[in-house]
Image (cartoon, rainbow, N blue to C red; front, side, top):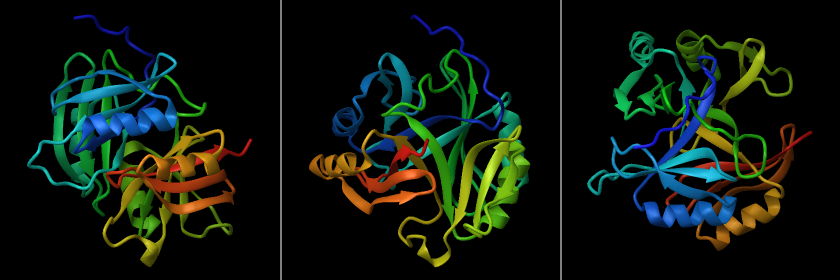
Amino acid sequence: MTTEAPTTRRTPGTPCWVSLMVHHLDATQDFYGALFGWTFGPGPQQLGPYVRASLGGRMVAGLGELPPDRHLPVAWTPYMASDDAGGAAEQIRACGGTVGVGPLDAEEAGRLVIASDPTGAVFGVWQGGDHGGADAGGEPGTPVWNELMTQDSSMVGKFYQAVFGYEPEEQVPADPDRLTLLLDGRPVAAIHGVGDALPRDRGPHWLTYFEVADPDAAARQVTELGGRIVQPPRDDAAGRLAHVADPEGALFALVRTAR
């Protein structure tokens, strides 16, 4: 078996990968391949069928297939870099979170944990081996941001601060319940408290933003490919963005980042 050369170490706490577990892997590859121009190759199979998506030969995301008897809602899951997945799992439990999977070796690629914060939002921890995370970022078709959508940012912000060492920065007065999470003074993610606007059927969840050249055209393409528009394209401080869902209901955002 061939392996990739080890990649550059990521600062612990940095979002380094996004992954989506679905019920119909082939159809999901068709959807994202058409939308973002991704191609696919095999990945670690510890949790079942799994492929890595690439863009121009560089890895950007992962897609896996749920067991037929697992009727779970599908959602994009961000993975935070760690030097010690086992230690991160212990810290997650100590701070009131729940570890659902792992620590688990993913062949030579690395070691993973899948967990949920005290509000139930699912996230992952990745201790890189041969696979350090996404190779591409910033250009159309790549994940560029992750934001936790929850009822109230303050309590859960303390959880992520304790687990990953983030420095939370309040965004006031523009948005009184949004925290930007900083690592070494650099923004890496955000927590947005939306109160009763949080969908009751979804609960607290992480939302991944994918860069696109034209959010309006990309949103239309989502519907043509069998997905739906959740929030139509609009201008925002981050740029122009739209919230959409794929055919299985996984939520994500399309953004043309403000330059």
